[in-house]
Amino acid sequence: MKRLGENIVWRSRNYRLQFASAVVSALGTAAAPVAMAFAILYAGGSGTAVGLVSAAGTVPAVLFFAIGGVVADRLPRHLVIVAANLVSALAQALFALVVFMESVKVWQLVAFAAVNGLAIAFRMPATEGLLMRSVDRADASKAFALFRTGLNGAQVAGAALGGVLVAGFGPGWVLALDAATFLVASGLGVLMEVDGHLRKRTGLLTELREGWTEFAGRRWLWSVVGQFAVVNALGVGAFAVLGALAAHAKFNGAADWGFILSCDAAGMILGGLLMVRLRPKRLLVSGTAAASLPALPLAAFAASAPLLVICAASLLAGVGVEIFSVNWLTTLRQEVPHDKFSRVAAYEALGSFGLTPLGAAAAGPAADKIGLDRTLWCAAGIIVAATAAVLALPDVRRIRRTADSPK
Image (cartoon, rainbow, N blue to C red):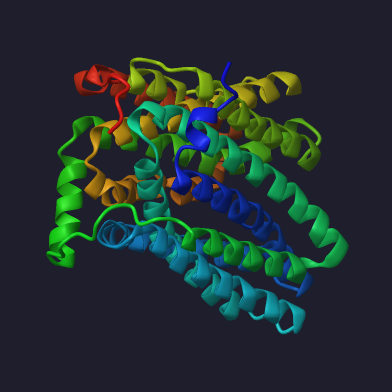
């Protein structure tokens, strides 16, 4: 019997290196938000300052995703990743330096976060495009499942490690560690091989338009992206606010809220492991249906369910997100031309995550106006309705896994 993932992890050099690079950088990236928040608070900053710095890291990523996709489709993707990692390493090293010097100023941290966000805009489309090129179609589903399982495991470990290291050594050392992980990831990226030939350049606007045409011309693609935008806005953005409020009002506050979130993370790891073995034929039907599961913890909170029930619902939500993610990546690998992978990935990321900050921003005022439980029920209902609408589309139902032939 073959060992888990044996036939994919060792076949592709780029896959092995990219897996290692992603896991290493995820450890630091998951720890960094803890360090960032406490660096500001230790310096006497406010919650508003923490939110401002966090937002500064998001806005450039959203604004430049499309351009990042063009660059990643033009150039060797592994070199785009290397360059982006070096930029992030520099930004986090400077962040650590001002913390060590005890001269923390919000405008500096905003600038460092913005530079890191800009690097994300180029790294994310290049990473997804390179990952799709690194495995054959026959291996894609298992490869994506293992990749995401490693990534999620590293994020869980990194967040926990970040809290311990900040408490024991201070936020500056955690930020320096994050910079070091980006340097290691860059070194691994240099060892990767060129994924194809350079394309002839036809102009930035033309290439943006080509990527948009590829994205908008596939009804199943933009429909599912629209659904996942709703899931992210309500099941991630709004849930981060509403769940914390509900845990404070109905349970033991931060301790129980942290346990609920850990169950969600455990669910994502479990979902990735399940998808190593599962091979659903109807990729989008199964994936889209699973993406409705983040409605469960919202509904469980609204129904004032016991803590264990809410934790179970959160676990299932994490499983659902991973089932969707692996099926989604497999579908893109199967249906989208490889020379447009990164541009499509950029528009997909822009659509999927663009509404998440709005969901978080609107959740609190909605809870104040119509009540916490009603807001939770509404959020859960909208997720279910969006899922039903997408599942009703023939274009979504017709996408099936093709024969497992390398391509």
